[in-house]
Figure 1 (spheres, rainbow, N blue to C red):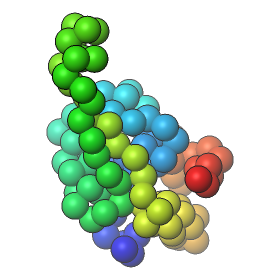
Figure 2: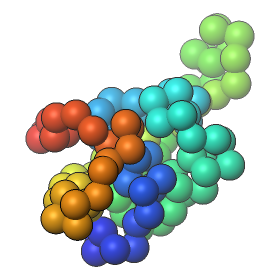
Figure 3: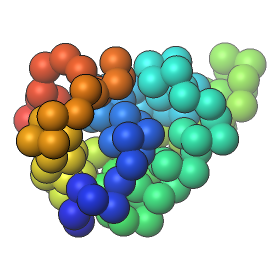
Length: 108
């Protein structure tokens, strides 16, 4: 997947997931993006095969007194796409938003 198909917000969301921010509200907190941006970006990344998603068990959410969370994880293709997108931003001389700055995501 070409990084050209991802805007700054989608790259920021992918970066947050790669950094271990695994569910929607956590990604919102990390990126400071609104839910109306984060959740469509997560859905798009999932459709593209750049992240996988799974729902947590009902029992855990009930025990903690909250709605179930959907957890996201970056796929190997997602790691490549993120690296390509960050490199493209650098090569264009664009200043990365705060959610994109920092060290490269950990391989694994």
